[in-house]
Length: 220
Ligand SMILES: NC(=O)c1ccc[n+]([C@@H]2O[C@H](COP(=O)([O-])OP(=O)(O)OC[C@H]3O[C@@H](n4cnc5c(N)ncnc54)[C@H](OP(=O)(O)O)[C@@H]3O)[C@@H](O)[C@H]2O)c1
Image (cartoon, rainbow, N blue to C red; front, side, top):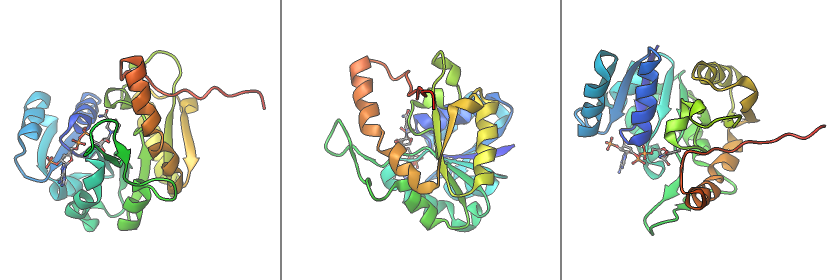
């Protein structure tokens, strides 16, 4: 499948490389056509990897686009990517609305009664936004077996058919169906975005970012 990855940071790198490993064609989007980090990523990943602007990458995608951009600029990036290029496509939003301007730990720029995912969905009414994977380190996102045992990935989105497709993609990389939790519509992303403050404290306390949340269910 032709998939776009918007973002040249460590998340875009990890997701893009893993998708290529799985046989997909991936175009990495950036503000510029020839971003140095994106070119290095293409060089590492061979003929199924390419790079261009956010708009060109979004247009390249057949059905799935990953938003792996800095949360505070995600809306700007998606405007650059272009509503038309994203129309009818699934946007898997892994970004978090974190502000690092006052150092660590970062604060949330959007919370409680709103979320970045909802703002993205409002910006792109003809795109199916599915918030997922934002609650774990990027190496685990499409490689869940890096953490042994059961652990969870959450999904939020207004369109059930799109969430089904994301579920299929997630299962194709090793997520067990039972560990994929559909929280409901896009407003439920408020919950997963607000997990970041505890995720960051766990990172400090555990001394590693290779961990994940697991919801242990009781008898009902
Ligand atoms: N690190 C993790 O393991 C992890 C886990 C879960 C979620 N996340 C989330 O994933 C996202 C990506 O994180 P990351 O560390 O890979 O990358 P990042 O440094 O947060 O973001 C990189 C991308 O943001 C774009 N960007 C930066 N400043 C911009 C501006 N002023 N205007 C427009 N675009 C701008 C860059 O564009 P150019 O390509 O043009 O430079 C680049 O593509 C973040 O939202 C983060 O919170 C990260």
